[in-house]
Amino acid sequence: MSEPNILLDSLLAEAGISHAGLAARINKAAATARRPTRYDHTAVARWIRDSAIPRGDVPEIICEIIGLKIGRVLQLQDIGMARTSGDDFGTELPKAVDQAVALWRGDLATRSSP
Image (cartoon, rainbow, N blue to C red; front, side, top):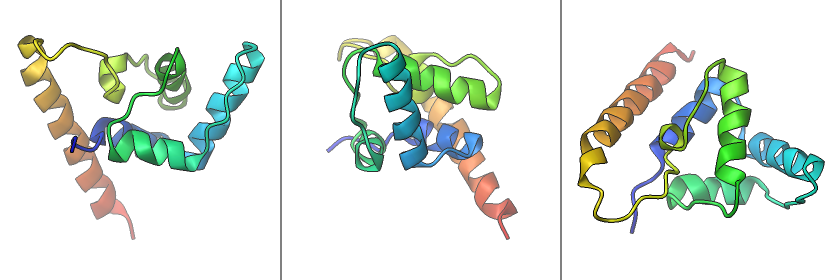
C-alpha cells in the first residue's frame, strides 16, 4: 500500500479548494481544451489516499489550478505527482523535506482553526 499524497492534500487546504472543487475545475479546463474529463470528488480522494496519478496532462492542469489560487508556480513534484522510476534515489531527501513542510503546514492549519 502506498503512502497518502500529503503534498496534494496540504496544497488543496492552503488553496481552500475542496475535492469536488478541484474535480470541477479540472473538468472545466479539460473541456475548454477539447479533452473532456469526468472527474469527481472520489477521484481526487483516491489521488490523495492512494497517491494515484491521473492520466494524460491532468497533473499539469492540477499544478496550474492550485498554483493560480495560491499565487505561485507549481511543478509535478510539488503536488506529489512526478512520474519517476524506482531507481531515482537522488530525490529522496527533497521529497522528505517537502513532506515535512506539508505536515507542518497541516499542523499549523489545524491549530489555527477555531
